[in-house]
Amino acid sequence: MIATSAPPGPLRWSAVRSDTTVLLATAVAFGMLFWSPLASLVEDWWTMPEAGHGLLLAPLCAWFAWRARLAERTPNRAIGIAMLVSAVLVRVLADMAAEQYTMRLSMIAGLAGLTVFFLGWRQLLAWWLPVTLLTLSVPLPEIVVAGLALPLQFQASELGAAILQARHVPVELMGNVIRLPGHELFVTEACSGLRSLTALLSLGVLVGGTSLSHPVSRLVLLGAAIPIAIVVNGIRVFVTGFAVHFISPAAGEGILHATEGWLLFVVAFAALCVVAWGVRWVERTVRARRTT
Image (cartoon, rainbow, N blue to C red):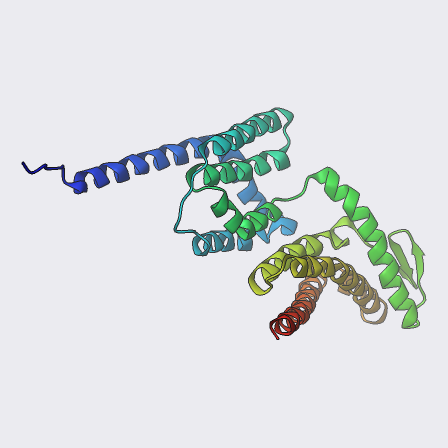
């Protein structure tokens, strides 16, 4: 007697249809729960200059996630559910406290929980770069910005005034106010360099994740991004003061001032790429010596 079995085709189609239904239901539930922080985050990317790098990082995150997907799936249902429950609780509490930053981070935590639930820990670790970039694209809370901006304003003012004095320009520094003959430069929060520092750190993670192989090398690159941003912002203050003193007071405001900021940010990014090239050369040298 020959045993017969059901053809595998309908079973496979049934499994695919079941998985599709679960994914669609999960996507709808996630969208309903986290639509508010997602919409406000995209609005901030579009309207806030200090958060504009999110418009660049978001599609890059999707691209890196697609490239780093693993063929083998080892779902961890228990830990995934625990992460999702925690993310939902944080989202509800942040909504009650009207705290946007924590609410947006809970959305990222929810995405991480879904990844562990459906794909497993290994996939979440493989997606460290897009997760980190997405986290860095979330604007910092105003209280943190205020706490960081003021020391950076003083640092930029001191550095800019020192370079002006080295160029024999008479300068009197009072906090974040630089007094020139007949003019005063006020280094505001927008000119503190916090915007360029945040964007440069994000680009440092991006460059390090794509060009460097060792975690220590990536940390060195991130550490270099901080002094680069501070020095370049001090140079920006110097260039503004120099132009105001020798050319025209209009050079310290309007489109000239904004263009100067963009050009110096390009210089900062180029300096970061040079540091990345040097660290990569060290990596290759160390690797070659170990192999020989």
